[in-house]
Image (cartoon, rainbow, N blue to C red; front, side, top):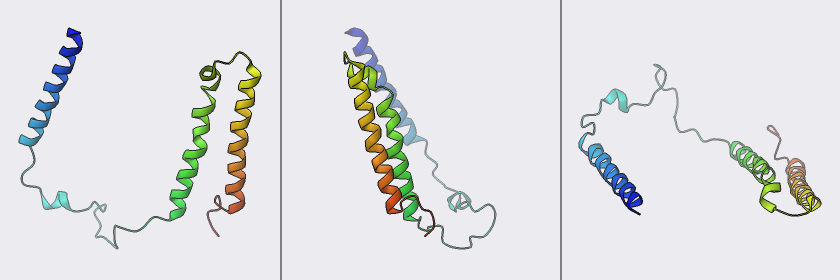
Length: 116
């Protein structure tokens, strides 16, 4: 119990010390050159706030969804702790089938096409 209290006290002390150090040592006179956007030495040609295509976000979300299959399938045999490996195989096949159906749906809806 004393070790836990010591660790909590020391981490609290260290956190407070770092926060106070950060508030006492800020840069008070920022250079206008550092405040300007980085443009590789060239004058800015246009707005730096160009909107991204929504297709980029859709592909990123699809990647995250289909990438989760690894997180679901790899620990499945250890997490289920079932006596029969047939049940684990059935659960794995169900997950793969759901992911395949989702991929087919996205493919038929045109979610994987870059250009229309």
